[in-house]
Image (cartoon, rainbow, N blue to C red; front, side):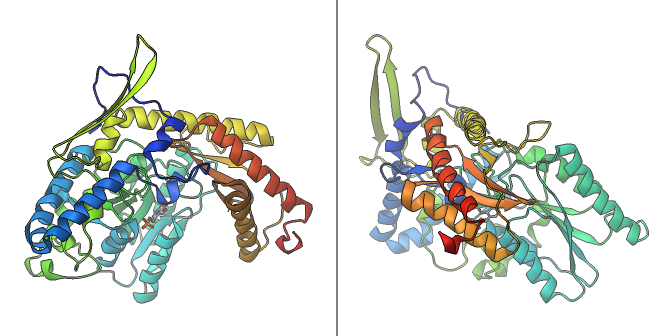
Length: 459
Ligand SMILES: Cc1ncc(COP(=O)(O)O)c(C=O)c1O
């Protein structure tokens, strides 16, 4: 599952020396890997190599090679996620995966769908669409205000379910057919006790759909152990593959009832993998940048000479002369999952504490200390009113513009439970100084907003 590399070599240093492996603009400080991700140069080269291969013989690619490569992609991901590769399909993004699951459901009047109030808004809208298009179907939403302890969150979800059961004379699960729970929610960017929630849902015979948009490459994932009914996770966020690549997990027991939203040729055989593999003609190259094959043997090492105290950088690929290395292999060259994830987590914790100290505010954390994974949420030094959505939007927009245009940095500001917050992501190319840069930019922007009571027009 964990691709932690065992090597006798010292591993490449994290922090700013990593920036040269990525394509970020010089001098730009990004603490927002969580929104869209970004991929290393070697993954970009891998994308180009696959595109060239496809164009060199489109028929061979579309009719043969692409399908073989997709099998390899699922196979590597199956090992990575500890599940049968036949339970996996590759989809463009989490939205596509979640839509496929939800819109495959045969909902009847009286059925209910469950979510938490911190659900990603696009997914919330998908649930609203289902309610609008299915008579008598309704949404049950569990209100969550962070910081909340894991125990309290799990209890709140179970209480809402039990309340629904009481309304239905003790029917297990009430009329709730399916529940969406985040592995890591977007805003706030916090780890959710999804493992415990999946167990609660199972106990109440409610289908669990884990929105793992932020999960793969961010926290360890073992699907055999978790055993959700469905899970989707974006490879283009924390795993470093090209934007537009995600994994959908559907265990065998549900495969006959799940179809992509775009029905195509595979439907005639009712074959889960064939249905998802071909939903019409697209450029499949991005999918290959997850783990890929093509016979590359990535040997991409940086190591320190202990005697002369210098770093040496080796980039060797066999048999290709190019430097293309897909995401999973790139991560192995960095030392594997535990090294990457522990660097990012430690930096997020330290960065959050530093910023909270500089602003005289606080980090969003619960008594168990489980909320911060590789994203940390810090309260902004801002007390301006946010009486309506428009006022929130305009102030958020201002906070973003000051960062992007004046200070050349970015972290995502948002409002939650009556207060202003920012979500700061730590990645292998970040260092503690990056948190200071963003703290300065947002500190200035917040002071200006305070001076006009949040009325952006006066600035
Ligand atoms: C929790 C969560 N769910 C779903 C999504 C949607 O992902 P995508 O736009 O790749 O479909 C996101 C995107 O950031 C997210 O944070």
